[in-house]
Image (tube, rainbow, N blue to C red; front, side):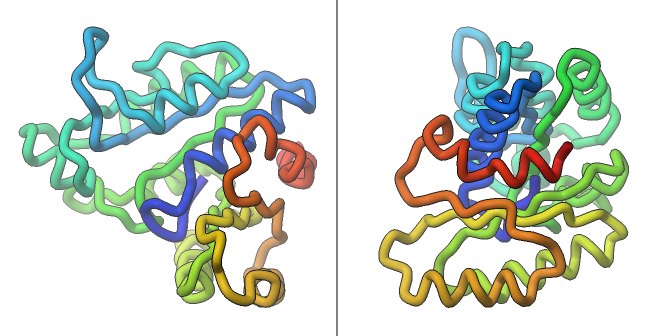
Length: 219
């Protein structure tokens, strides 16, 4: 699951999708391979988004599998990693993904930042979907500017050879002008179907019915 930007509700959409998959009778778990802005706890570094994905899963998978790369500073991952003197690589993340995939029918993988958020030298958030050959659901934060962000993100996803399965609109601005007109424009211009629109302020478990189309598309 990719997003048009940081702070547009990827975790909210991913948790809602997890609840929808569970309602459809399938086992599902969430994963956030890379998370920056993690807090020190008695159990180690923990990230709020990763904890939300863990809690929304059918059964709670081990945190280390949900979030194998946990970084302290709330910065772009490549900067947070540099501050800790570590280098992010795909191998440990892939091992965690394979472990989750062996125990659940569906694994919802939430990316970090936008499609081209840098993870390190010559490594980007997009490489997770590219290397693992994952279909991509694009979360569009519905606010002023979303049309440009969504179209550019979709173009980058397809240009990278990934399959854009669909997009989810997430209402993050309750006062957005011309919401329905913007949604109509997105439906017309994005090269993939709308899988649902999440209302503002509705918790993931309550909004799960909005993603019935997404569950059907995911098979």
